Length: 319
Image 1 (cartoon, rainbow, N blue to C red):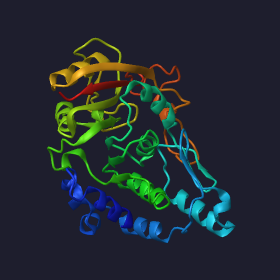
Image 2 (image 1 turned 90 degrees about the horizontal axis):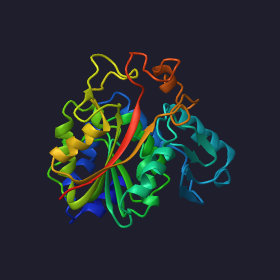
Image 3 (image 1 turned 90 degrees about the vertical axis):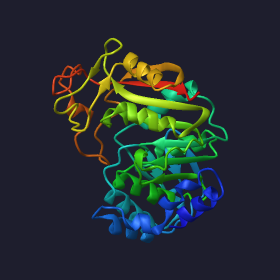
Image 4 (image 1 turned 120 degrees about the horizontal axis):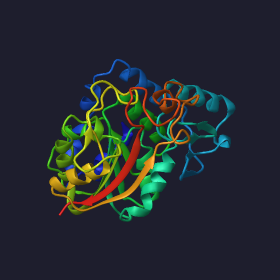
């Protein structure tokens, strides 16, 4: 928990101090997952290697192969495979390349030129997964990037990576947005990417995001959307692209209208792109069903008969 000790010192006596109870060992020990102790022991026992370099570009690279002996490199390689599936990335740790399901750099490239500069900003990344985007935010100059995600396997992937990034002010906490002590209006930029269509109430999600922003702060919203007019939203009765927990898939215009209805200003659609098999696909590091398995052969519809996913990026501000 040394990493949390560092974060605790950063939050103490600041406006983000209400997050401190979630850093306590008691909170972590109380998380409900049968493999939690196994993961924590694995991270603790991972080879203690000091990286000679690091870079957070299209591929997050930590250290080089020459930083450790062959036995340590093999042990780390085996450990990384124990954390499969790797959804977001790619990463490279001490020469081991982790080819993630998502080429997440493509999403980052679509949004980075359309948002306010992240220099010296406090960032909240909702649904952060394994923290890939948090590290890209640090690359862009953020003073701190805090990700939250309730899916423990992905949080543990980040905690393993973070073992080798002790001084990097990026963190991922095993939390949902509605667990935060709201209102917490102290973040300069809040990201919600790939989350809102999993929420039973998209309006509650938007209002909770708004409560995390300081006045004038920026929201970066990214979501699956479908083609159609303002007011239309697909609500799959069963699955959407093999996903069972999809409640609403709006059109871009509908999502814009939701943001305005929730009181956001300067709402702007900055990108709408079809998800390609180059951006999301099966790999040895994510060997399970991926986008190709969720689409009909024509690529235009999902196997359930719904429109194939588009992804939209919308920016907005809290007044």
